[in-house]
Length: 173
Image 1 (tube, rainbow, N blue to C red):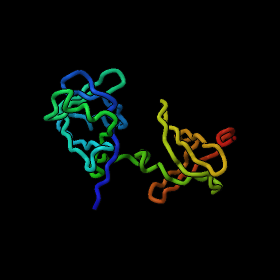
Image 2 (cartoon, rainbow, N blue to C red):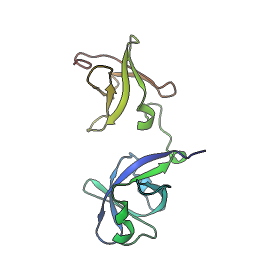
Image 3 (cartoon, helix red, strand yellow):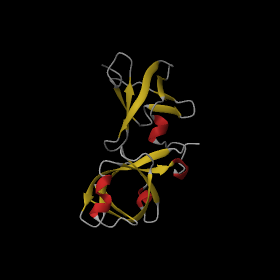
């Protein structure tokens, strides 16, 4: 069976000369970057994931700075720029009933409470206080739906179905 992997960050650059990489995190679980944890690196040049063990982690501005075991110079990590750090599917954390992973929401069909089909979730934005789901609609501009309880009434990731309450101006052109 082929392993599933999920993004936890993108390597955007190196930092200094001692093998540190600058990562834009895409996870809510900072412990993914704790020393000793295993991450899988993917880019266009590697046919198989590169297994990495985190050696050190620290925050710097909006970035996470990581070093990996056996990679202690800039020459050991320069090739990683532009690649993605991922975790194996089996390493995902359990979430509470009202929490979801992005990959569970993206692709779900969206309906109004009266069962009118709206479209499907094609992307999730994280601008600040709450996530915003981008709903691709047929023949119309994408709709932006904030993930708040006044609007999102039901999420069923098994059936890939979401029910929302329409509010004034929410779905207007």
